[in-house]
Image (cartoon, rainbow, N blue to C red; front, side, top):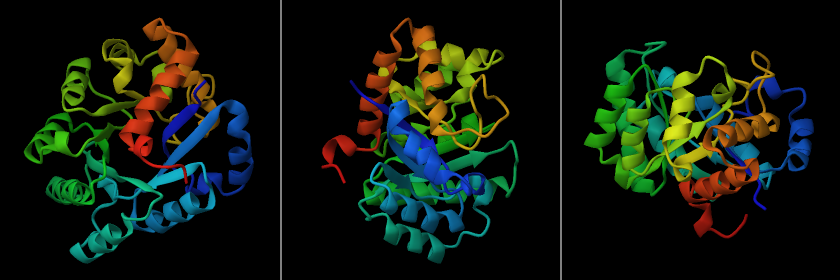
Length: 262
């Protein structure tokens, strides 16, 4: 029997300052086997690496979120690039475009998205893509940079089923989290039903986007069983099968199926 693979969390966030250890201690009992902690800004790069080295079940992705990319320079990106060979680093992320907050300027967001896509290509790592209200530009830049050769996941997926199928054609995984349990999440439920289980991975985006019945509270990987159950209902599968299949998907996504443990 497989265990839940948490593909996207932010445990370096100050929301976990008081009880991070307690949450981690509870993960095995809730059936959660591995966690990938995701960097988002310059400060989080070191924090994510540190956590991944302290906990054997944890890996990390290093990259700069579009909303936090204004301070980036070529020199700073070079520093991040130098850390990508660390064995606990399994991806470049989270990177992409965010037109919901729409800051910094879109040209700056696009520039650093492109630079980080190419950084991932050179490092031989997949990418964790954040894309909000920016579907067409995200897809266009991914096509321009032949992202199908890089591979990765579109995390916290929020677009249409048609667009999801385009990402899947490129060999990308679709990250589904707590939003799939929301009553008003019609689009995401359609996506979960309409794409193959082999292209879905489980995530929380902790501390954000807690599933029902914890909506509005701080999220953690402990709530992932609710996400697995919701997907199982939508797909007419058992929850355990969803857990098993998405775990295998995550191992392939992060290429941990090719690595020895540790």
